[in-house]
Figure 1 (cartoon, rainbow, N blue to C red):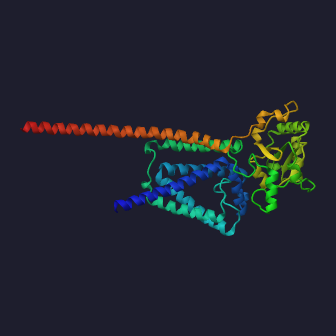
Figure 2 (cartoon, rainbow, N blue to C red):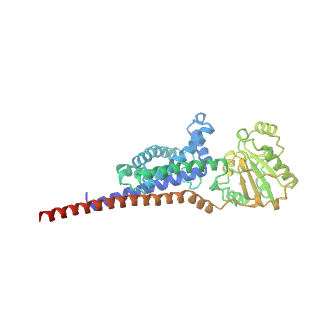
Length: 405
């Protein structure tokens, strides 16, 4: 093989490797940021294939976290050239499974999208299939010559990046499970004017984001626009399924409702549960706040917590909290306008991405620099030793020549 042809093949394999690495890292990262979203998508798959009985909530959640960690770490392995044969084989196996699956999804359309990039990038089923075809061809290329993938870290020290990546992914997933996703990719993010967004979709006849979000009273009356358009502050307690909701902070929620009553602020609990489940919840928690009905899928999209809390200001989403972060407001608390902590919006998405990069990329870069220095020092020592041996050999040869003369 000529040097030119060999160079082209080496370049092609490394391009394929980088394509796979970037795709897996991005796919895994968005799943780590929103593991609940992946859990819900796996439940949709289970329902579509009629295996819901085999996938309880905890199983779906565990698989969602595991899938996110595997994808993220596989992308890191491919990027740095860690365990090249193993990473190449694993990427090929995953795509041999996913490509036929996405072909079936494209033909039969049992779910609207595969959820491979969460809510960050929504692809149609056919777009997902052709994306997987390209990635499958790339994985075939790299498994043909895995040793042609250039290493960016020495083989001796690659365990450190591998271990740090696994720990980082696990901690990030747990953090986003305990709180809300650090980046909100969904249409109900902070800053969204709900009445305007819903009205715009209704006028255009679209069903993109807000079509399923409707608020109905227990008598069946549509309260959506009337309730959301009320001026001032108001709170929505979002509990898609009462029978599965966390009741560990009910005292805080009841106190918040009493605060809203005192401050003349509307408070409403949205759920998709039956009247029986609502009555059982009220008896168990002492809830006195009113309930209204909304589609469960829409509620799971609004806030990734059951229950979760949404604060609106003039119909605009001002803040959202998970059940573990609910604000503490009582009868003795200051008026709403003086609650500076509640008025502080979440960090902007760009700042969150920068923080994630600093927490992950900066340590990795520093370790890669240290590894490069270590490798360079090792080669320099070898160079000095070889140079010393060559000098000794030359000196011995010169002494022999002088003796012969």
